[in-house]
Length: 305
Ligand code: CUA
Image (cartoon, rainbow, N blue to C red):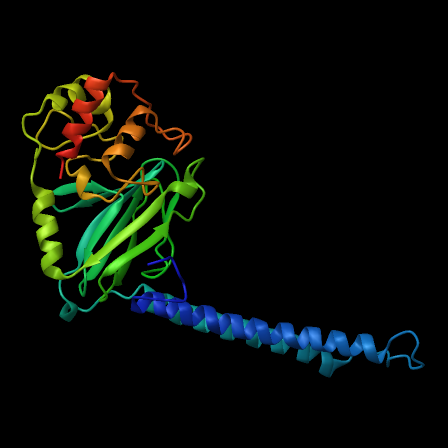
């Protein structure tokens, strides 16, 4: 579950791990040779010794050797890197099935996921065993999508669309992290990818497509009266703000604030009252509500399953 580059769950993460180990081995070998020669020189030609080392200047064989070997090493590094890039960016063959496309939009400091027919936030659900194509975009500054066990880092750049492809066959929860400094809460821009068997994914998708699941509730009026509606959308209601996460199925998510806290009643209240202590600098203001209003609002949000 933890973001571990040494425990790949996809072919693309495996080829990155392999590249990392190869480069580490080559560079480790160079380090060992340099330190070895250095240590030998220190001992062999230390001051208390009598010999002066042979003074060589302009020796062709030596100059050719120290140009050719590093060039060869760089060439090898380039070749294995290009091979890895090709593996990581490979377009899946049509036999692997139709890829599932999700538009991922980076915001300060949360993730928007637009599927065919609905939008959700922060927790990305994907079907196991099917190729995935993420279309990465940003509405503000550069972010970077990085879930080490699934794929390499890929930046989300304003005004540009980057593609990230992988296929994960092992159901599970994969954690990640925004990997490009994007402001005060960069470190709390956490990623949670839930890879699930095809039938569970289909059930999740069907439930996410439903609109306005809370129905008539006194809290709906509180929500509509407060500034919530300017930033948050609840499909099927008048709330259609796009600035913050879509809340249509808020309670289907396990965390709040892009992974900073567990999503439950107590934390919802805490978050609405003042999100700043838990996510300093975050763009949501606090709402100092009376007890009755807070109860109604949280009761309403809890019905958004
Ligand atoms: Cu988004 Cu760092």
